[in-house]
Amino acid sequence: MPTIELNNLTQWDDALVQGIVARLCQELRLRKPVRFIFQETWAGISEETGEIVAGTERPEIHWDGTACKMSNGGWVNVCISPATVFPVVWNINPALPGQY
Image (cartoon, rainbow, N blue to C red):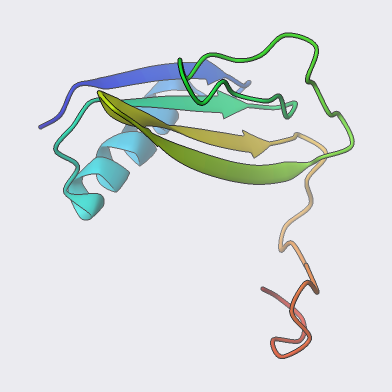
């Protein structure tokens, strides 16, 4: 299993987040080191270092995610605000009405 670094900046239980990350790693068959960052307030991540960039917080973003490959592995950023209401309806693609 690859080296996993987990930075849980949410109110979620650490064991729950660790379980989610472990399952993702297993399903995706990751082979290189990966940094997982879970946030409640969206903030930019440096593509070079995988660190949160100060001053890039965007509290209007309630949920989003991104990932980036780096030479020594990669990082995954997950943001789910406590203000998020499920199911999330996101009509970004009119060919998929309702939920995307």
